[in-house]
Length: 99
Image (cartoon, rainbow, N blue to C red):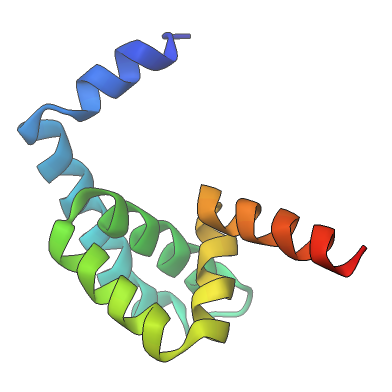
């Protein structure tokens, strides 16, 4: 396995970022095709595609932030699905306030 620093430096290269963005777009485009099939395949392909697009596109991140401001409850679920650090910090802070 490679070290985390090697992967981080590799992801900084524009070609890799564009490839990951394209792969995320492909996953998002395939989702409606998998939706009618039995099983939860469409949900997973949508989540993977959304995660890749949000990680590699500044435009998509800005749109996501606007969405979170307008729909805070839905934004919280999206944060948990993407395993964002802000969601973990927010959950820990809320648990401390309740205690």
